[in-house]
Length: 577
Image (cartoon, rainbow, N blue to C red):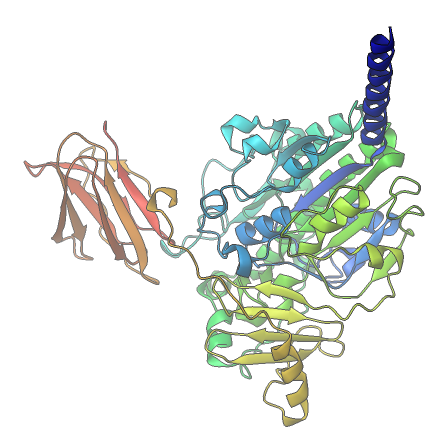
């Protein structure tokens, strides 16, 4: 009997422990995690462009805290999203560039949804959260289905492309294009379907606390959205970017000038598409804002309103002519400054029991690296080991606090980065050249002060507080390279080469059961024999964008061809066709 009483007492204690653990998990706050792609500060609450119409971004900022001096960790999708989702800095993780594959470099790294699910959360998501893959094992549920590893639902695009900007050559990203589509939001799909899926989850009560991710793709290129969004921005009223200055590159070092002027902007101006491009970006932002509104409405209407933390961020900004640049990939503020908003209701977080004061604005420099440790602290989870970010919960408590920290934005190679403090910005290039700006009086970074003797001490300050140890870029497996399009021979001659741009590494992989022969075409159509590739072997070389490579069999019969694009790539000769 005594034994039975001991066992019974033990079972009661065990049951109590399980109940306590269950209650603890159940009491944790939910997280709505919203990522927006390629959105700079052109939203009302950040004041980047007075033409922008963003009532829902502004609404979220007014209900939580806006970090007006937030900066991306890297000005490109892959390294920025990898850093944000892992809490690891590029100079320590070695994920520097879009061309890399996160799981090749960091095969075991735990990302946010997996970390939350390992601590009792249900993790679900939709849309682009990582760089063109889902990481299926990190989620309980995803839309589209996680086993596809394709985060994009159906999106309606024009049948004939390009619509607005003709391609200037193989160097040009094919998605640099824009225009209205005469359709409804629902028929357009894309972010509408993402917002709809997330909204359905928010309208339901959940047994477990949830980590729910919403990846809004616009304003990422191409800037095609339903016509009604373009109609809000008549072309005759479009103003050029407020940060544009014609001679803005004159006071930059050689490395800065090379980083600034790019052929995209020159090509856009040549075809008189600058204002139309700005119109497309503004329309795409307004479309993204509308999708955000659907998600926020569902949160407000559903049962999760009072126990859900909301975090919204953008992976990086975008240049629309500032510094003679179009796209991203720079360390200037047009690319590094991003929206970051955090909403925490009252009485759901032990770390912040009074919640966030609605409408608060913090201008202390903040990095997206801080999102991971901030969320774990707010949700009372153990801190993730070996994390590089620092929690901003102290700033959520007191937005006027001055931490003395700097926000670091790392470019795609070691020793290339930008630093932001409250009033100044510093840029360092691998050759040692520098730029320095007094943002308080020069928000568009028009005046480089790096060579002014009176600012020598400020340069010393930034140098002393710069990252010192950069992990080298690891050798990338060619199997992870994007694929060049295989064009089977159907009787027509392959196009001649039109080489243009910087040299790219390319790898040809022979999947046929026979030996193949590679020929590189010249601009006049003549062939240069380059290599013989045995079955299941490969050939590594390099070429300029626009180069055409013909594949033949032993008898000299053309099997097909590849055309080199704007990045390193692999050309897979298929077993059939």
